[in-house]
Length: 133
Image (cartoon, rainbow, N blue to C red; front, side, top):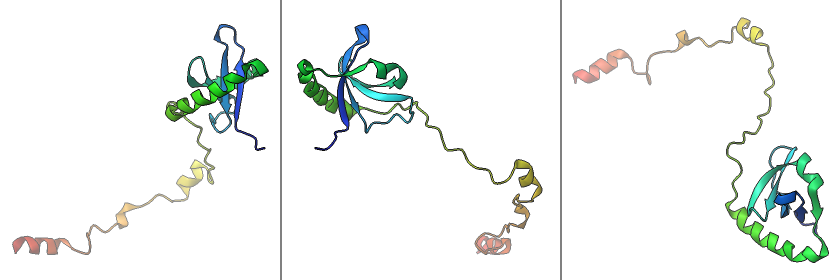
């Protein structure tokens, strides 16, 4: 039997307790957070891993009907789920091969004085000739 990426459980958080579903395929991009589908709120929410993991438990035998309800509701919520657009993922650090001082002293700056102003091989004289005709 293949391991499913969906885990159904219960978040015990006092008044905010709810059946939850975790889909291991949804990543937040931050190892300190995770996404859980919260049945009471009917949405996929981002939780702090440190805060929520101690409050999670497996569903009990008498709560097995919740698992099917969770999966169906999660499927609907997943269709409209959008990752947080405000979240900026960290870009990899660019390795510098030379220090800024070395770049200035090496003379790598481009010189535009060598650029020919002649466009497509046509000099100013030829442009003037075309206007006269």
